[in-house]
Every structure is written in structure tokens, then in C-alpha cells.
Length: 228
Length: 332
Image 1 (cartoon, rainbow over the protein chains, first blue to last red):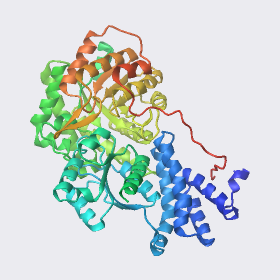
Image 2 (image 1 turned 45 degrees about the vertical axis):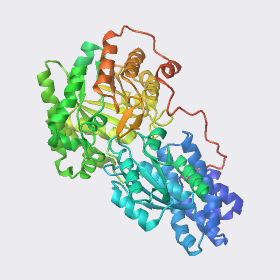
Image 3 (image 1 turned 90 degrees about the horizontal axis):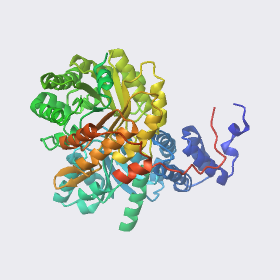
Image 4 (image 1 turned 135 degrees about the vertical axis):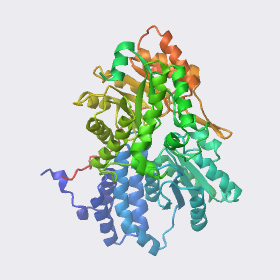
């Protein structure tokens, strides 16, 4: 297409214009453009932490809000998160090097017997997009795997996901075991998945049920800031 | 002629059955266990569940094979027995039907693969077709009358399952879950689903909605399904409300009476196949059967009337639109 609009040269934009453009590009899931934009900011001497918080996190917040509000659906959000991941791939080692502050740490997994990880992956990506460190245990995670990861990583938050009515009750097994081991109060537990609801989350002893990945991020931020 | 089509022609409205998973839990299914393993290990319990639905008046039995594709069964070391698992599921239901003295359809349940299709995920379209062919081969071998493709959210995966049914030579029914602001989680709307089914060279015997977030949301979505059905019979299989934990048990908020009301509303909407998904016990199915038998017509309810009777929507449609600048661009 020979449309003028297609000829945006990122490197010619001011810092502010570039930030706005990258937020739009995140929304549109344009991974290459995000990588290019991150590199331009780094060349201009921006701190990795500022690129993350002032550009990418702000962009992902818009994506998350529109997902929460039923404007965007899973495919668009996955593409946006994937573009975000492209930027994070560059920023992650630099953030570690520069000792940038973190929002918090989260261990996340789909529970035993369940292979559904679309929502869980979205939560992981959106949490990372919000500045959290995420340890993803994958699918079919049993209580021993959750416990081992909690001991190793000392997360602020444990996130569990289930899509099946026959697996969602396993979350209760995990929470009960955390209590038995005396580590339940060391972290927040948030749960999600299609068959769940707020009352269910409460009844199994989770700190919060999150309807979708956007709400998971909001909830995680709220919980860690309350604890701080 | 397909048995399901024949019964639809004869009876006008058919009653499907209730839940599988949530009814197997009180029978001893542990959390995380595969219900499909019981097609070998506890045939008696699967028979008992099917028989309870037959006794409640079901015209259609949905087999215990929802998670019967290879990758799902892999978790439970059953992925080398895909055909066998599905064949057993269909045979167990078929044998009971043969002894029932009634004409009942054996609907071979086919759930989603659990994978995202390329480009969002790793599973290719061809890979999805192959997975469904393997499952449906077993269901057909076991004598299933139709492939009952359910709880779908991705239009591409629906296409793959339909292609598999065509390949295997099975008639099919296909239902999706509209659980996110009136659409599937992948953003597929009831209207687009109906239009897509009308355009299929081999049309479904019926199509519609199952599971999701509650009876209200499902019936409101069904208004658009009926409007875009082009005369294809529409299925509604709603959850019995939402799940709650009571002690060690999961109980659903919707009573049999509520599901009876739901069945009446569904009939007035023009739904042809009515049943229940998660949380629907045989008592719920019995209440729906009574409603179907006693029904003598009524006006199609509006969304407001559905909500008034069945309760508020869990995930209502949004009237918000994206607040975007004009900087948006698309790379060619």
C-alpha cells in the first residue's frame, strides 16, 4: 500500500510521539515495530525501566482495559502480548543488570489434570507486561510442583488456572496443602478459569478470583501494594 | 436419514441430557482425573449416569468422550488408545439405548483440543483435523449417530472439527460457548456462527450453544443464533447456574425449577434441542422433560424477559468501543 500512513519512520519521531506510536503498535500486536521502538529508546539513552513503565506497561494497560470491557478478545490480546514479549526479550536482561525495581514475583500454573493454558499464558504475559517477574509452571501442575516452586522462588503471588469443572476443585487441594505446610499466609493466591466465579474463589480460600488476565493484573497490583 | 434428523422431524423438540463431569464427581471422580478413563475402569458408573438421563426422558445421550483427543488423553497415559476410548464411550451409551425400548440418539461428544491454532498457537489446522478424525473414528466405530462437537470458541477449530466429521463420514452437531461479553472468548459472535453454519456445504443437523456462564447468558446469545439459523435447528445446553463450593462438594446455583423455566423460554425462542451442561443432574433433566411435555406455546422472550426470569447476565455485552487515536496503522 502506498498510503502515507504506512510510512511512519519510528526513528524520526520525538520521544513522546514514539511512545504514543508504540502504544498503538502494541494494541495492534506489531512485534517487529515494538522491538524497533525499544532499540531506538535504548540508543537515545533511556533507562530500560523507563521504557518498560512509561511506554510498554502503559500500552498493555489499554489492551487490558479493552479486554476487560469486552472490546478486545483473546486473539487480539495474544498478539499484543506477543509484541510485548518481543520488547521484553530485549529489556529483561538489561533490567536485571541495572537492578531495576520489580512490581513483585508470581508463580503461575494450570492445575493437575488440566491442559488448558490459554488464560494462564495470558495472565503470565500481562503480569510481565505490568512489571512482575513471572515463573510459569505450565500445565498439569500438581501440589508438589507448586510447593517446590514457592520454596525456590518465594513469590508474592500464586496464580492457579483451571478450565474444567473436574479440575477446578484441585485448587482447593493446593490451598489446603499450603495451609498445612504453614506457608499460606506468605503469599497471595489468585485463581481464574472459565467455570469459576468469585464465590467459588472465596469458598476454596483464595484471596481473589480474577475474571480475566486484565483483572488478574489489577488484583495483583492491589494485593502487593496493600501488603507493602 | 440420520436418526437425530428423523427424531427432530417426528418430535419437533428434543430433550438432550445433563452434565457428565459434574455428575461423575459425586460418583468418585477425583479432581484432575480423566472422566474418559472410566469408559474402561468404571463402565458401571457411566452406564448409571446415562441410564439416569434415559429415565429422566432424554432423547439424546452425549457420550463420555469430551476430552477424547490425543493431547488431552496424553495427560492420563491414554493417548495411544484414542480410538478405543471413544469407541467404548459410544458403545456404552449405544448398548443402553438398545435396551431402553425407546428411540434415543447417541451423540459422540467432541470437545476442543485445548490448543490454540496457528498463528496464535502451535497447532496447525491440519493437525487439528487429524486429532478430530482420530477421535471421531472411534466414536463412529462405537456406533455414535452423530458427532456432537461442543464447547467450541474458535471458528477455525470449529471448521477443523467439521472437516473431520465430513472425512469420517459422520453427520454432526456443533455448539459453541458464548461466555465473554456475548461472544466466545475468541470473539466469535452468535450471529457470525449462524451465518458460517448456513454457508457450510455439509450443514450441521443442528447447531447452537452449550456451557459458558449460565442459563441467562446462553439464552440471550440464542436469540441471535435463532435469527441467523436459516432454518437449521438450534441447540441450547446451558449450565445450571454457576458453581459453588459446599464443603467438599461443588454445587450449582440453578435449581431444577429454574431449568424448567429455562426450557420453556428456550422453546418459546424457537430452540429445537434443549438440554443441560455443567451442574445439571438427572433431576434438572427431569424438570426440563416435564416442561417440554407440558409446553403449549408462547411468545419469543426478549433478552429483558429472559433476565427477569433466569437472573442477570454474568458477562453482558459491552456498549463501549475502543478509544483509539488516528495514529493506528497497518503494515502491508
